[in-house]
Image (cartoon, rainbow, N blue to C red):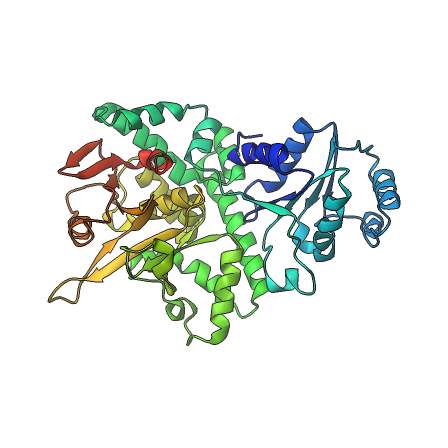
Length: 443
């Protein structure tokens, strides 16, 4: 199994909350939730039972029809699974818990019983049909599981990201040769992405045709899920439209352009279902960065990114030959300038994987129909850090300069991330993109 940060979060839960709360691992399909849960139970408990509600026998399901008598319930569960449970030394994993809402509701009573620890995994957890008619247990400690972040990817391919952390802390240029080498690793992360199956294929030295095929199958799985939620196809069309709308550099995502139809009240519900699938990331527009960012975010004005940049690349083109060309150009740093939004997507992925909400800001230029735009806003204490993402050159930074003038009292610092080495222009910090995770750590 790959080294995953969610494992450490599970350890924190076990030390602090187990016995009082079940742990819910929530995330998109295929991000590794089940693997993490089972590896944790195997290593940290004397015994465990894993029940996969996507593949469960009628006999085992029948055990859950009545838990009002816990002694009998646990005896039947052990008999059916052939696993001996030990009080306070065993865990029970409920995999794909969203498929059995009544079992999720019963978590309250199982936790109160106190004999064992419980780990739930699920996707589409908050979709209306998955919570209808049940009381959502308050005895759940939630951990978000994301596609593998850049540090996890580096661990997987046998490289030490701690070296980059130390380089970041030094705050000095590292030289073109070293910077180019580290940027090659970062572009490799963008190309492969953070889905464990794709990373595993890369480690097994599969070519990008195979890796891309794996990612396309995951995208197809997402399309199937979205079509089940919304048979009209509007939901899956919104997902498909993410690359094209970023390519057009729109100030915000236009749902009608994605669906090809007039906006309806149902579209808002569809959007929240898409968000609950964890396959996408919403970056909300902030109207007044001088206030706390969450206070002036506009729920009707947002950009959409995919939760995994590797999937984003496979989503961009139906033609695999075109995609192979993108891989070649990306890995050799010959990507067309108009495909720079790939770097914007990976920045969104990195920020979101640190459990931060995504925000951006636009405002109109004086005596002009054009706008300034800050790609991302990060908070630091009571101040704000404007972040610009560039695919290559760092020469154009008018927006971040004007932002610093307009909100001078609010700006903690400002950073432009590109492929270039560490530098600065006045108070504007220039950093290579692979340092973004470590800049976030510092805030």
